[in-house]
Amino acid sequence: MMEREWSALLERYGQRVVLHRGERETAGKAFLQPIRETGQEQQVPSPLGFRREDRLLYLGVPDCPLGQEDWVEWNGGAYEVWSTHPVHAGQEVLYTWAVLRPRDLEAEAAL
Image 1 (cartoon, rainbow, N blue to C red):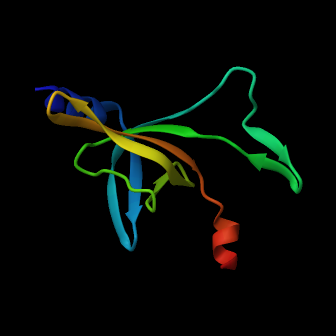
Image 2 (image 1 turned 90 degrees about the vertical axis):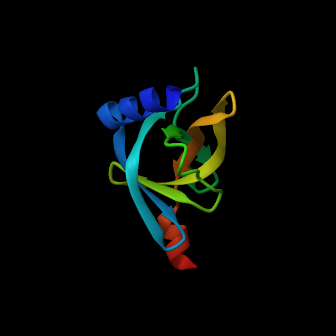
């Protein structure tokens, strides 16, 4: 029963995302929101200048779990999976919970 309500909420209010698993792409919807911690900036100093530390909370469909090698395309940006796990309601997987971080596309292109 909860699965229907969750699906209806995602369909109505979810944001469009593209999940990348290797060469495979899957379009879908998820809730994404910046994680803000009191007193912390989204950019922190590093030896080479400021480094982005922004993170996003991701709540997505249960039938498309994310893995550590997967990444999410959302709102013109690319985000790697930092942490992920399924959230259960009894025996049923209700949704996929994840924390995403911006991908370093320049570093990947240099490889």
